[in-house]
Image (cartoon, rainbow, N blue to C red; front, side, top):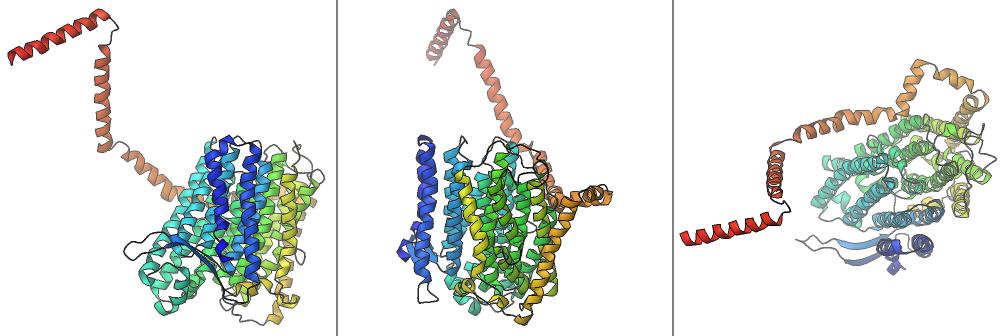
Length: 629
C-alpha cells in the first residue's frame, strides 16, 4: 500500500492542472466533476491506505515512498519523499474527507459564479499543498507545502477581487503569515546546520544526542518553529489576518478553518515535538500563547455582528486550545480536538454559507432572525455544530475533545491552575458567544426574507458533518466514562503519552466544573438576548461598556497597533522615497524622450509637398557632405 502514497496528493494536483489547462472550455458539470471527483478519489485512496495501516501488526510502522531526488548540491540531497504514520494519517483523512464534502458543497454554492473553474482549480491546489505539507518526509518538502497553502489562501481569500476590500484582506493574510514563515525558514537553517539533515525521522532520532535539554540553541530553534506555527494558525500576535479572511467565499472559509492552513501550525509543533520537549521554556510559551489567544479571541467573538467573523474568532480560540494542549504535553488531546474541531467548524461555516446565500448575501446576524422554522435542516445541523463548539456535555463530540484539554491543563506534569482557569473561563465564553449566535440567527422576528433555499449539493454535506460532530467524540472517552482510548492508542505510535501529576479519580470534579461553565454561558446569554433583551440594551447605554465593547469588537486594537508601529511608518518612508534621485534620473529620461517625440511629431504635417521638399533637402545635404569630404 505504501506504493500508492503518491496518489493521495497527485489526484488533486491532476485536477488542478486539468482545470487550469482546459477549465474555460469545460462545461460547469465537467468542472465540478473534475474538482469534486479528484478530491473524492484522493479520500477513497486515503481510506484504503488507512485501513491497511490500522490493521498493521507493527505499532511503529511508517509507510514511506521516495519519488525522486529533488536536488544534489554540495552534499545537500533532499528528496521528494512521502511518509505516512499515525499522525499524518489523521491529518490526511481530515484534509481529504472534509475537503471532498466542502467541494461537493461548493458545486452548489458557486454554481452561478463566472469563475467557476478558477475556483475549483485554486481549491484543488489548496488541498494538494496541504497534503504535501503533512505527508512530507523532510522539512524542506514540508516548507514547499507550507508556502503553497499560503499562496492558495491569498488566491482564494481575494477570489472576488473586483471588490478592493477583498484584495486587501488577501494581501494582509499573505504578508502577516510571511512573518511567521520567515522565522520558520531561519529555524530550518538552524536545524540543518546542527543536524546535517532535514529528514524529520532522523532529526527526531538524534535530537537528544545532538542537544542537551534546555540549551539556548534548542530553545531558540523551537521558538522559531513556534513563530511559524503562530503565523499560519493565527495565534497572538499574528492573528489579525484570519477575521479579514472571511472576504472569501464560505467554502473557502470552511476549508481554511477546518482542513487546511490554520491547522498547519498544530501539525508542525506536534510533528517536531521532540525538539519542543528539549526546551521547557519553549513548551511553556506554546501553552501561554494558546491560553492568551483562546481568551482574547473569545471576547472578540462575543461582540461581532458578522456571523462568519464570529466563527473566525472562534477558530482562533479553538486553535488556542490546541496550542495549550501541545504546551502542556497533551499531544494526543491536541490532535483529537483538531479532528473534532474540523468536523463541527466545517459544518458551522457551510451552514452559515447556506444562510448567507439564502438571505441574499446578508452577513449581519442582527438582520437575520426567525430562521428556525423557515430553514429547519440548516437550523438542526447548525445547532449540532454549535453544541459541539460549546462542548455540550455527553451528547456532543466537542465535549470529549475539549474535556481532555481541560483535564490535562490541570493534571499534566506541565499543567497549572492558571492554565486550567483560563481554559475553563474560555469554555464559558465559548458557550456564551455560540448561544448568542444561535439566538440572533434563528430565533426572534424575521428581519430578512429568504430568497431561495439551499439545494441537495449544499445540504447533504451538512448532514454528514452533523453526524460526525456527534459520534466522532466516542472514539476517545475519559477515564471515568470507560476510558475507551482508540484514538490515543493510535497516536501513541508516534506521540508520547501525557505525564500526569493528579489522580484520575478526581477527574469527575473538573468535568462538573466544565458542565457548570458551559451551562452558565448558555444561561447568561439566554437571559440577556432572549428572555430579557432590554437588559443588554440598557447595558449598551453605559459609556464604559460601549468602549470595552468596541475594543473587543476591533480585535483588542491589534490592527490599529500594527498600523501605528509598522504600516504607517513604512508608508511614510515610501512616500518620502518616492521622489529620490533614482526616480528623478528615470523621470529625466522620460521627459527627454517625450520632448523629442513632440519635436519629431511636429514634422508629420501630412502634406506631400513638405515630405518631397524634405527628401530633396536631405539629398542635397548628403551630396554636399560627400563632395566636401
